[in-house]
Length: 567
Image (cartoon, rainbow, N blue to C red; front, side):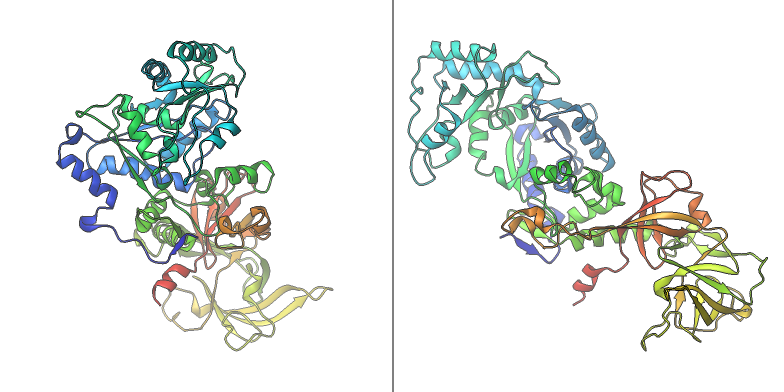
């Protein structure tokens, strides 16, 4: 089980993590001519999630820090699962986080001719052969980590026969799965990846870039290091799962590289979050089975989902910086991510008044035909953002939860014969209520004290409670989508059984009768962040239409991570 990180990861000496220290040392030693070129190599078969963001923040960020360059290269070696939709989405997500590859956009398919030629060369040198065994047979004859493998019956095929078969494989003369090209290395190696790994397999699905030109496609272990070499990558930064692959990466690269230039692979821990799954297969299941609304569902860890939920690029970068890069796997608290989001939005989000569960408040001594305009701070954290006006009238909406007919002792909101202040306005005193036939409160009655208007001389009389409100005549009805944890357990990936049984049935609650102030209603724009007074941070959803605003809850006001750190 992964260790759960409960403290922010400290960076290494000099403010550099271990990867940056390695890069710095290589540059100071003059390796590769003192040049730095990283790369981010996503597969175009799905959407990026926050774990991918941790990877490309390192790829692009280290290049920026040390004056190098970073390539974007799509690992498009499996046309059965790839789509241009994913390519464009990946580009957009990287740009959203503030990074750019400039003119360094590449595809593994750019190197198909060179890779094929290298494979032919290895066949001619007796370092590769065509195997006709099934995938099950190949897996069985590879042995186990404690027992050596056995040679394929096709391992000693003559070079000319291997060349002819490989050419026929690419010509489409054999069915998918009928043959593969394997490297001839060492079936007794302690490293299972060295036991004659597969280099090419037959795929007859047309490639979205190269069409029907190729019928054989390279495997990741063969294509990746060579692609790095072809485009001048100096540091191949990847996750810990590729540690056992590194010797094979170096084996294939050295078929091309020399002392003057050779890519280097460095591994770091993946990003894992509590109450979340990062498996692309599991995320795909959630989408295909309609358990979420799509790849951009605000409960998903995809960058599109986080963006739709209102998370900001700077908050994601801050979170990645806090957790750091290490050489051991860990499970990070989602509360730390939320802490980063909350800290960023607290500085930037405009404060507005929204009533989620409205009940009418009638000020019986306030003139029926009167409207005043109260100045509301846009952001107390930044006074330079100024104020906006909010209409105040005889009838107001307040939160139903802000009134109790028979309150406990420490209830400092509104109750019979008690006083509270309406934020930015007056002190009021409850005088009565009206209920419907079912016993539900329909209206609350109160009187206001005209000498207590906020900001005016003599208005400093103190009361314990302050309520937010919205004027009834000018309010707009809105839909609010409250999102919570997608899973009910801290580490769903570690649980036995079907992960879908761990889904939180209350991860989405929709309020369709919220009331928002007119200043906000006039400024509805998808993606804009706001702090709803006393409620939390929300973002305008793309489903908003004229007259029907829709908001997604980004995060609540309560910071459990900061509270935990104070203990």
